[in-house]
Amino acid sequence: MNAIKLALAAGFICLAAPQAFAEDTMGTMTMMKAGQVTAIMPDGHMGTMMPDAKMSSEMMKSAKPIKHCMMMMTDAKGKAYMIDTSTKKAQAECEKMAM
Image (tube, rainbow, N blue to C red):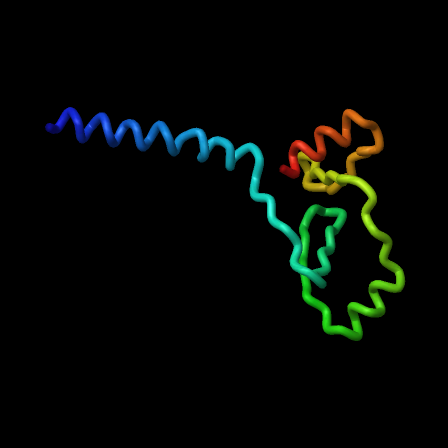
């Protein structure tokens, strides 16, 4: 009986381990909410806000739609970079990451 309990516990640990490692390497992906504004600073920190209707209307005057997948990354010192995703290969990698 103890062997069965031990085998079940080991099975659950084995099922959970790949998910834990995947979270370490890929991070969490979320969708922006309708009307949400996200700011990315050069040092890599980010912030979001939900502007009121007047502020949102003003921001939309200078906004442009995103035409393709975009990627950002930080270096070892924390400086943020935007990755060029204009090639088909880079687009495929970007879309794969976003799925």
